[in-house]
Length: 185
Image 1 (cartoon, one colour):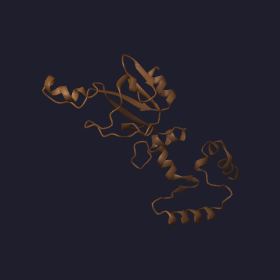
Image 2 (cartoon, rainbow, N blue to C red):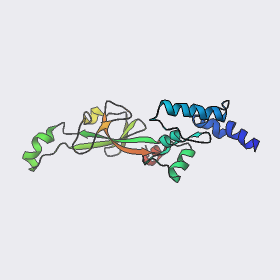
Image 3 (cartoon, rainbow, N blue to C red):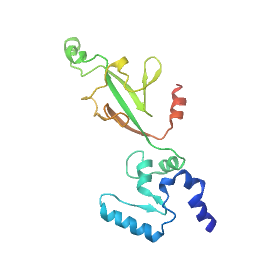
Image 4 (tube, one colour):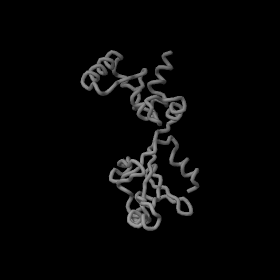
């Protein structure tokens, strides 16, 4: 009905997610021809829409496991306003390189490091040391600098601090408030 269309354009959901709304003043024909022109100008970018929803933006924001599809639970979480947040692992060598030099003599086998790790999420570093600590990354005063390369795990630049190398674990749809409650911090 006309009222439902009006609510779709101006209702609370449309106001909450304006990035998925097409410009109301453009006609369907103008949007269609503009999208076609974009597709011709940039063939590497796919423009896929469902009504006024840009499906490519939805996929980028809601595809937690990176399989190129959004399952029911990812869609529900995204529709509830949740957004995927990167979860990374920082690796530290608490021996400051000594394990590489003396492990053969002491243990009959060479070890790259004596590892300590922390989880990097929501821009903070969470680590265990008798209880769970929350610090600004990296916690160099506690563990020294994080490893820049490792044979134990593939390291990539952090999405939070590109100068730090981390193991990219995946994404979470949980909120920072839920993590705080779960950890009891």
